[in-house]
Length: 258
Ligand SMILES: [Zn+2]
Image (cartoon, rainbow, N blue to C red; front, side, top):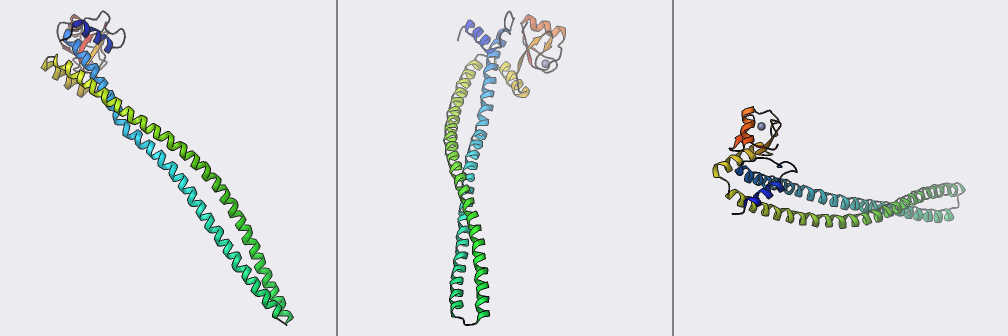
């Protein structure tokens, strides 16, 4: 069993500054206040532990989005290249047609046929110019996509590096929180052993149902748990510090913080 002075020290450590100065607190409440502090810390840590998978998911989706961005640009690049090849083929077939037409033109003896073929050759040459203009535009677009892809790949490498660092930090944080939680739980068990069984179950019931605290201070006659004024009788009972007194409004156990 540890000494009372240790317990008092622990109570002071567990409480916000000034709260216990000169306070007359029922001895069992002192133990419960330390217990409550540890339980609140355990709850904070558990809340934090619960956010970890969300943080991990968030990081992983950032990573996936960055990879998807790169993949989309690669796909765009492939499509432009396919388009360019098709235009090149179209130019090729027209070039062949022109050379076939030119052969026909040289072989003909008829002037009107010669001219008709000449017009057709011209039409194909115009088409070739249009296709080559289009091909040039596609090539310019492909260059732009290539530059965008290089930038996106560079950014994706940085993102990947940063995210794997953050994921490993998260892993470390998770382990730290887990060991803190275990440490606090051990401390809690040791403290709980020293508290009267009925009082401990009352404390646990209250702590779980209220969600914040089972034991709260009275300040200027007001319960700091429910913010209602307690009766004068209750206030003086608490001030005397001789028994465990509950707030008649919310049921939380009261202590005097004046
Ligand atoms: Zn109350």
